[in-house]
Image 1 (cartoon, rainbow, N blue to C red):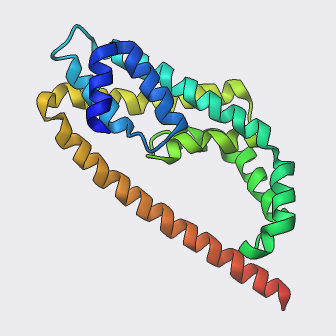
Image 2 (image 1 turned 90 degrees about the vertical axis):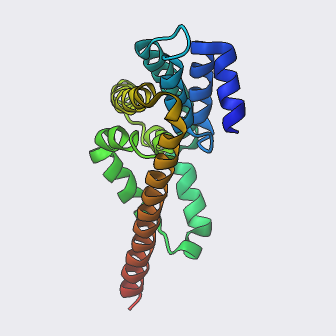
Image 3 (image 1 turned 120 degrees about the vertical axis):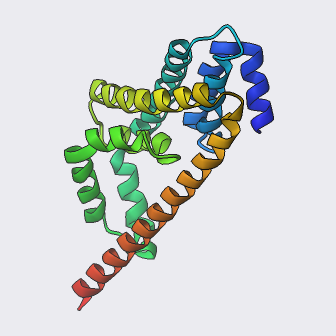
Length: 204
C-alpha cells in the first residue's frame, strides 16, 4: 500500500495529499503516517512547501471527519438504544449505559475530539460518536481542525527534516500505534469488567 500511496502523491501533488488524507479519515487502515511523512519529504525534492502540504492534509482530514460526523448524525442514539434493547444482554449493556455514555460525551466531547485527533485509528472514528451526540457542528469543526493541524504539522515537519529517511519515522510511528492500541485494548477490557461487575451486583 505504501508504494501506491507514494506514487499517487508523486503524480497528483497537493490534490493527491488532500484526497488520500480524506480517504484515510473515512477508511482508517490507510496510514496517515505514510502520507504525512512522505509529504514532508516531498518538500525537499519537489516544488512543494511544508505550509502547502499541511494545508492540503488538514483540509482533507477535516473533509473526511465531516463525512463520518454526518454518518454519526444518521445513526442517532435511538437506533443504538433499539440495538441495546435487543442485543445488549450479550454484552451486559443497558439503555441506561447508552444514556450515561451520551451524557459523558456531551460533557467532555469537545476535548475528547481534540485529543483523539492525536491518536491513530481513534482520530478518525471519534467523529462518529460526535455526530451521534449531536455535538455542535462548529465546535466539532473547531476542535477537529485544531487537533488535526497539530498532528499534521508535527509529522510533515518530521518528514521534511529526515528527508529520504522518512520511512524510518513510519517504523517508529508503527511502534507508537501499537502501544496506543494495547492501552486502548486494556481500557476496553477494564470497562467491560467494570460493567459486568456492576450489573452482577445489581442482580444480587
